Image (cartoon, rainbow, N blue to C red; front, side, top):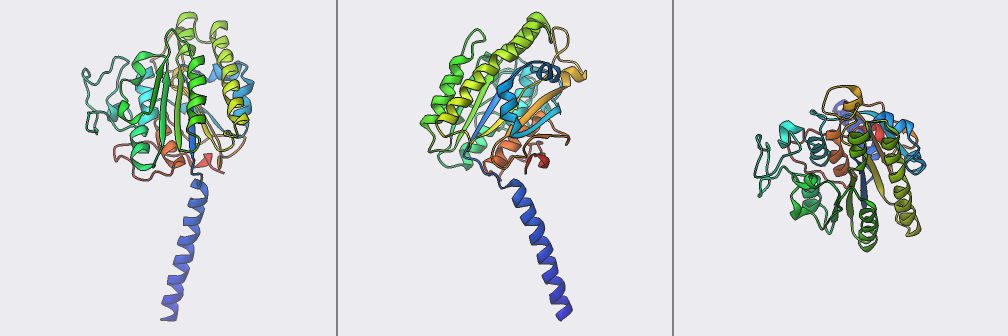
Length: 306
C-alpha cells in the first residue's frame, strides 16, 4: 500500500509541476489588447523601410518574419482568418466580394445572424464589461463581422487613417477602467503597392508615414499611463509581388506578425510555425477566454511567452 501511495503522490507532483509550467507560460491575462493592422505589409517591406516606432514597440516583444497567410493570399479571407481563427474552409470567406447575403460557401459554424464566430463574439460573451472597437478604411473589411459585438465602429474614406488613431486612443482612455479590445486597421500600404508596385519608393514611404502616427498613438498611451498594461499585435494579411498578390510565392504568402506586452518574450524572433489563423486564438488566451468555437483551427505559439 505504501508503494502505491508513493506512486500516486509522485504522479500528482509531476502533474502539478507541468500544470504550473503551463500556467506560467500563459499567465498573461490582459485588460487591454490593441491590434495594429497594416494591409499588404510584406516581409521585405518591413525589413527595408524605416519604422523606429514599430522597432521600439517590438523590442519588448516577439516578432515572426515567416508567418504564413491563409490561401488565397487575398485581403478579406486573411483578415477574416485573423479575427476568427478559421480558414476560408471554415469561415467561408474566399474572396473580397463576400457578403452575408451573397457568398458561395456558408460558414461551417454560425451565430444567430449567420456570421462565423469572431473574437469579438467570444470576448463579449466571456469577459464582463469588455469594450470593443473596430477602426478601418476599406469598406468591405467589416462585412464578415457581426456588428452586434462592437461598441464603436469608425470608417475613414480615401485611405485616410489619422482620425482612426485619434479615436482609438480616445476610446481606450474613456474605457480605461474596463477590459478593452481595439482593432485598428489601414489599407493604404496595400493600395500603394497596387498603384506603384511592392517595394517601390511610394510603397516604402507608406509604411514609414504610418509609423509616425503609430508613434504618436503609443506616446499618448504612455503619457496616460496606459501603455505598460497593454498588449499590442502587429499583423497584416499578405505581402505582394510587382503590383499584386493572390499567388503562392513567399513574397505573397509570408508576412510579419508581432506581439508585445506583459508576459510576452522580449527581443525574440519567433521560429515556431505561425499562421494568420492563430491571431484570434492568441487574443483569446491574452484575455483568459477558455470556451472557444470547436471549428476554430488557430493555435497559440507557445514560444511567444516568457
